[in-house]
Image (tube, rainbow, N blue to C red; front, side, top):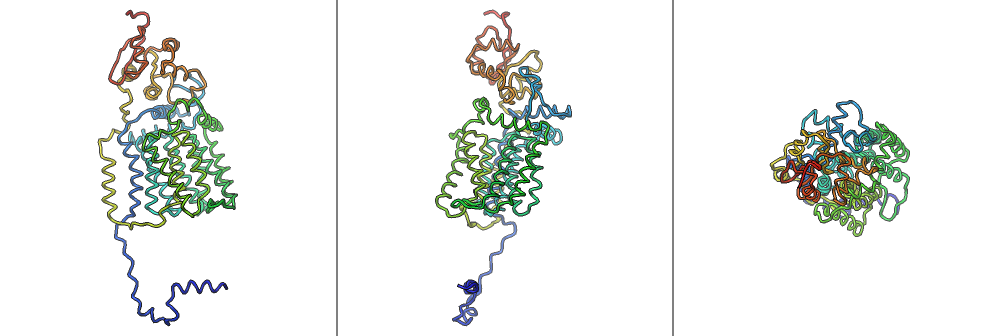
Amino acid sequence: MEPGDAVQTVDRETAPDDHDGGREASTASPEAPPRRRLPGALPVGIIGVVAGCLIAWRSALHNGVFDDTYWHWATGNWMLDHHRVLNHDIYSYTVAGHSWITPEWGYGVLLAESVRLIGPVAFWLLSAGLASLTVLAVALRSRLVGAGWTWTGLLCVETGVAVTISLDDRPQMVSYFFLALLLLMMTLARRRRGWLYATPFLFVLWANMHGSFLLGLGVLVLEVIASLVHRRVGRVVVPDRLSTKPAVVTLAVSALATLVNPFGPGVYSSALGVTFNSTIRELIQEWQSPNFHDFAILAVVVLPVAITVAFLAFSREDVPALELVLASFLLVSTLDAVRFLPYFAIAWSALAARCSPLRREAVRPTILVWPLLAVLGLSLLQGPWWAAGTPAASVPVNAVRYLEHQPGRVFSTYLWNDYLDYVGIRVFVDGRTELYTSTPVLRQYLEVNDLTTNPDPILRAYGIAYVLWPTKSALSLYLAEDRNWRVVWRSHQVLIFHYVGASRHP
């Protein structure tokens, strides 16, 4: 076949039949005019995008502040008041003065300054607001790589649910958004290289917010490897690879950018130390394997895996290598520690956006989307709302208020101690777990908490005067029968014991 033959073949498909001499063209009925899109009509997939955002807002509006948020808030207030970075412990009486390096210092400042500038609503914005930005970044990238609105909406629901499972006013919320933003920036950089220049600035912020900046560097490493690979493995390919030199330069400059922080290379040892700390993995639930009895966790893990397996088995389309490797790595990480679940959802959405089973939009844009959005918003956001910045019901506010007026050291639970940090009561341990794992303190706390030893010698060794503990717990039942301790405050949730020593007689 000559080159011109191919052109003639295409022309025959669109021109009138030559044998009819153009007669059929004159007798054929004219094509029906295309339907006009009604003003205000929206793609049905917008419902999924909005739902992905509102799921997080429902959780934020119906829950108070708790746990780690309080020590982040406390450290941020201290740094703003003293105009310097906090690099040692000032909140405990067990490791007071010990060196403390954490990339999360920046989040504490961000939280405290936001609350000072705009009030308690900052707690909603730094949890649900960041979750919404994460969902929108996933939506925008999905559309850029060719996913239809319906599939994009479903991916946003997946991301919204996964992020909401871990929703809290903690630096992880910033890191979820930064990962989604980085993937979006890399997609945009394939169209305009100037987006690569912004990447190091993202890493300056990331390295001063959360240790997951290491994951971001891992994404850039994959970009460099992808730029060097020019062969496909079966259906696995590298579409739209970056040029090697810009990819390498972006990785190198971004790695250097992470050193722009108060601790220099110390943020690497801190991030890696927490990740591979066996004590933290044993103690903290989010560092343990996911509980698949939770339907939400089951859905956001099993459904994506099932969809991916079905796509690989029954589709003949290409699979993007970079997104496949990243999603696979984060799936394994999630099965090891549930804290990686939102990262997996973001990475899988990046993969699924290029491997959509819905190749063509089946539903046309319609104005009916507007009333559906109204019903969705009312159903997810209907009250009563928990006032912004208010402690959660699990926080023993009244009991702590009593202790604020009592002299002496306090021994309380790992989770409640974060609130004690905030109100200014020194603690035994708190949510800064890595600070205690190199000392006997955490082991001693667990021995008292689990009642695997007589608690009195440990409590007396640290001169503890009060124990703030949940009712109907093993330690509370024990101290209630211990002649050295007397209940001085009680509620349905909390007991406060005061040490009276030998002055109390049976």
